[in-house]
Image 1 (cartoon, helix red, strand yellow):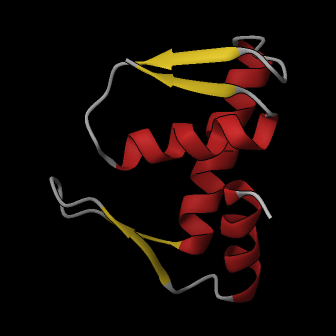
Image 2 (image 1 turned 60 degrees about the vertical axis):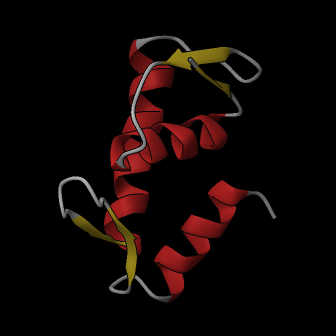
Length: 84
């Protein structure tokens, strides 16, 4: 099982359970919310930016909920995340 499958499975089984807390901002996300955000990011990467499976996506970001959304989004579309 890949990490993006794991988040989807938890979103289906325990959608209202806490999945992630962004320590810097205090924002909290349930599995359903986090999976939906990762799906939207994956759609943006694929449909707007044209990212395809096997493509590399480079980002410069601090450890935050946004970083994890992109990490999971890349996994969902088969892209490779390259953290700068």
